Amino acid sequence: MAHFEVVMPKLGESIIEATITKWIKKPGDTIEEDDPIVEIATDKVDSEIPSPVEGKLIEVKFQEGDVVEVGKVIAVIETDPGSIDENTESLEKQETETSTVSEQSQTNRNEADRNQQKQIEKEPETTGKETIESDRFYSPLVKNIAKTEGIPLAELEKLEGSGKDGRITKNDLLAYIEDRKSSTPESKPAQETKPEVSEQKQQPQSQPKEQVTTAPKQTPQVSASQGDEIVEMDRMRKLIADHMVMSKQVSPHVTSFIEVDVTNMVQWREKVKDEFFAREKEKITFTPIFVEAATQALKELPGVNASVDGYNVILRKNINVGIAAALPNGNLIVPVIKNADQKSLLGLAKDVNSLADKARRNKLAPDDIQNGTFTITNLGTFGSITGSPIINQPQVAILGLGVIKKKPVVLETPQGDVIAIRHLVILSLAYDHRVVDGALGGMFLQKVQQILERFDVNRSI
Image 1: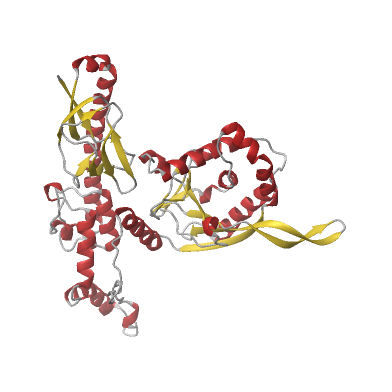
Image 2: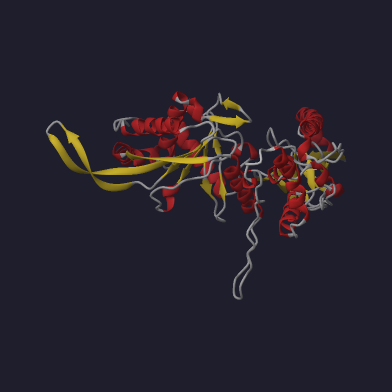
């Protein structure tokens, strides 16, 4: 018998570890090739790892709840030597890739630690009076939460973690932050205000003290009353909550609105939907049309297809459009259409349907939700006229689609003004006012409006 080692796969450019949430197969189970053997979760998506070979699972290296680095061996499968011989080339290739991933993971980890230490040395005010060096590993998610909450490395070093080898998990840090906020505030505000008092002494005597002191932000204390039901958020809802709070803290949100006459688009879809379904065996919705219009506008106004890095603006070369999708459990996920500007309307329609189906069946792969540069969310699904969505970081804008409704409107004709029934929709654009001002946001919405209102009713697909 031969042994085959299953490793934690690479799940995206920025992901270097994942949490084992459930072992689908147990030691002693017989496994077919491509059978899912374990469920894993990152801070972006849940996924399953299929078996690359057939055989019998003889060992699992980690337990449910353990955080495992990319490239680490997580299980061992006993295989028939004959089947290994038949697949020698593919298995050797996988082992080579695994070695490369493992080495790259360690390199990325070391580089991240060095960069973090350099940042700490540049900003001593965030770490106290001394610079602390650490050999302890912190995941990118833990680092981001700590940075957002103003927790220095020296403070992290003192925390006990519940993860493997004492590693601090996201839940450990969130629990500590909650305790930190609810504890008596005598000592912490005194430490925070001490340098501010020093600065106050250097100010002119007329400088009001209120201008140099700020009260710490506190989460309101909430208590349950008799008869209330307490339901803990599931893992995905906690991630969504953290991401939404972070986005509002990072980006000054501004929202602009525009009303669009989409009568031509509605009439065209009504005309082609039956033929499209008969030919392609799937439905044609309005979503791919909105995606097409948005991508055309993004090509003309690249400042909306961007990200912010400090005082640098990154104008994205690729246009990758995320489509916010509601899951059966009520949570939200954003699968991404890669290089949307290079696809035909037929290609966009197939991508939209495929990603929506995979989202409903919880079959999205990590790559399906990576590297989005702009997001569209359909607020009209449940009848909302419009709304003000929250930006999907690190993007700088998100387009909201309201419900399409018939309304009487005044039309200008050569014979004079007339009242007609038209299909109208309100589009909203929430944007990061650090880099997208009202003029650019307004021009983007106006461009989308023009594209949609000029839609060709005789177009083929």
